[in-house]
Image: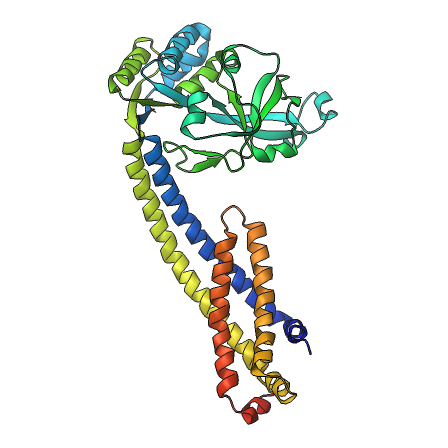
Length: 395
């Protein structure tokens, strides 16, 4: 008789216990995956910072501009030319390789019918995060195109009727290559390329985390599309500058002050990363402590639930052995239960927690737990006399 049929029957007859075991297994896998993800994220961040600073140290601005200065700057367009001078001193400086890490959202209507509505509400629009990029941005973060083409010199310098954009890989569900679309303001865009899967960048000075580009849109950093003070302000204040000549940064800070625009200082990414790494390690230590306690509690809960499960079926196992089955057959019956629970728990974790789960880690942990828990019933079957098994009828 097929032992796996007994496995399914055993799980179904005690659905409550089976569900508790399943929940415990899911929690166990989530905790372990989260710990591995945190450790990997920490290691990845340190390697990326080291790589980015390997040739030239990267700096960003510290903005001490007062509220009154900002109000004066945005009051009218009198400072527009000053901001363009400052922009050129950053992005057209031969001693500096600069790229912006400014991201925001653009909105498109969900349907052509919504485009006719005078006043759009959030439910009528699609929100799509975007980031401005130049060649240095693509070079520093090793970003590649899997379909279409990258931005060319003309995309960064000349104005087009449809702004060329590169989309993240998951945006292909919304847009196709060479498709033209418009935002709610009426500005048109044309999809010229698609990024490789899992493309990302790190913003060490702000979020301190890796930003995934799969669901983002990349716009070319082109002055023709940065015609307003707010646009220029965004790419100036969020500039990252790689240079071997620190004096050039001091000249930019001085120019900003002379033009009465910003009160800047600058700091090194490497210097900042030391503090970020310390913060990350403290957070990771706290996570490890809490996760360790939860892991122990969950493991004990799984153990108790599983021992109760085995205890309830000791009589059935005895009857199974008396009917001609071997210990191997009974172990397949017990192992089958664990295989079913393991498959379901792995599917749940990798389906609903895919942003941090790793299937290989989940399977490895599941196999380890399975081996540990299969030892218990094996010892019980080997060393429990048949009379004792048959005395323990199910309650």
